[in-house]
Length: 252
Image 1 (tube, rainbow, N blue to C red):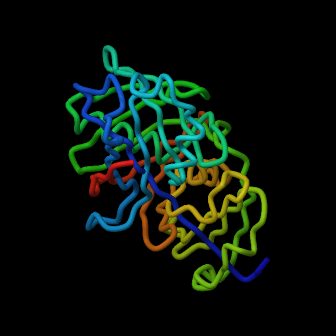
Image 2: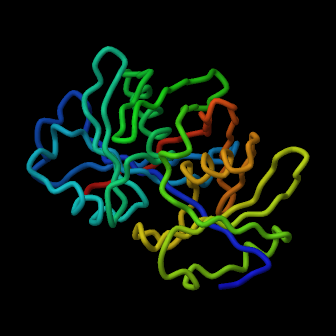
């Protein structure tokens, strides 16, 4: 494994059949609507997330579905009721109790569909949602909900771009370096072979965990240039924010 520096990213794709007509899979294939989470300010980059309505996949193995889609996470989402919904999260390899980019992405998508929520319940616990006029979507979660990451700090941020994901054969590795410590600006990459993810373009749970580890708010540029924002709260909660955009739909 290289030493002077390394890094990675994350994505968010939504499996989407229109909310008002999702009682079954379409006979000619399932429409997948792609959403990119944690884009830069121009709407570029970001991590694709898959979202599918739970009622549409009652007879489908969710884990096999996520593996077939192949994005870093796919979400199975219940119909929202009174501003609240329940969600399960799958990587290509296993289910997660919590993940950041799927929660941010699902919150944005629900609002875009005309069904904004204030709470998304995931297996780890209730995640609070806040949609701001500046285009940022914020969630509030606890660092202990995140998967276990190995954090490697490097002194040279430029070195991170030279790291080869093939050096990582197991575990979940978050490599990072300060680009401006006074501002809380970080450059990072994430590699998670244990989750079936060679490299993630933008990893919300890792951003939350690093924020708690450092006990300070951060501005994170991950992967090719995706942007994540965090706010540390001394009570153990962390706020995670970012931009989300819709991408081209596809049929599965």
